[in-house]
Amino acid sequence: MIFKPLKNIVFVCCFLCSGWLLGQQDTIVVVEADSKYFEDQFYFGVNYNVLIGAPDGISQSSFSSGIMGGFIKDIPINKRRNVGFGLGVGLSINTIYSDLLATKNANGTISYQEVPADVDYNRNKLSMHFVEFPLEFRWRSSRAEDYRFWRIYSGVRLQYLFSGRSKFVTDTERISFSNSDIRDFQYGIYVSFGYNTWNFYAQYNVTNVFEDDRYLMDGEPLEVNIIKAGLIFYIF
Image (cartoon, rainbow, N blue to C red; front, side):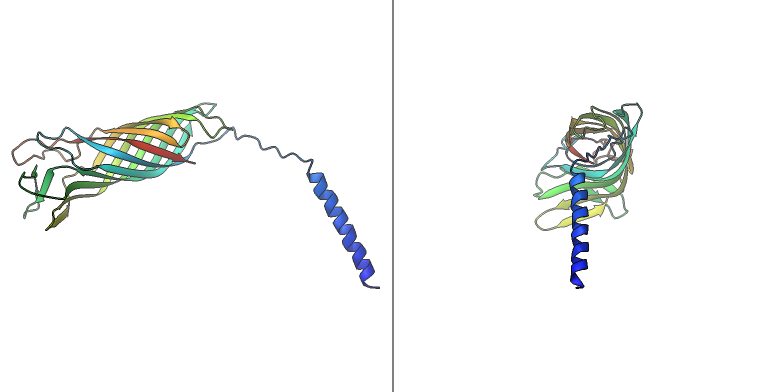
């Protein structure tokens, strides 16, 4: 009959396959650690912004915050590859809530003063959006076979402003405009340290938030810096 030879062929094939599968149970797959590993990382951070050096009478209000994210390329410099440099690119958004009122005049210039005491307002903020370029020195306790380790990263974060706005909101009006007095190129020094994904982050912006020769209406120089403190998360 036709089906008997076919049955025998199927039986032989099943026998050979089962023997091959049983043989694989004794096979041990060894994956060697990559001795040339990199700690290339995506990062995401949240922080609180503290205004320092503000003129007398100017103070923060509400919660001034910032977020950032980007990618850092790892450049090891020693054999163990736990010391090196990092070069990255990213974006950040920062807001400062304060009683520093910015007013755009008819001729395009911007005047600054403390919000008058008799003015009731909901919020007054300065928002800044940057393209950032972190350059850092890196130390970590990592090895090629270890994905959880301690780290200390420190460096300079270069920032280019692509959007900066002042906004003043009351119950009856909303005033918002692009603030050309915000410095286009800024930089800060920073440090991050921690274990595995969770790390503490702090940054001091060396440059003034505003361009040179900007003053309050009473003639006091407008020289303001920012300190950031928060958390940064490294994701492989």
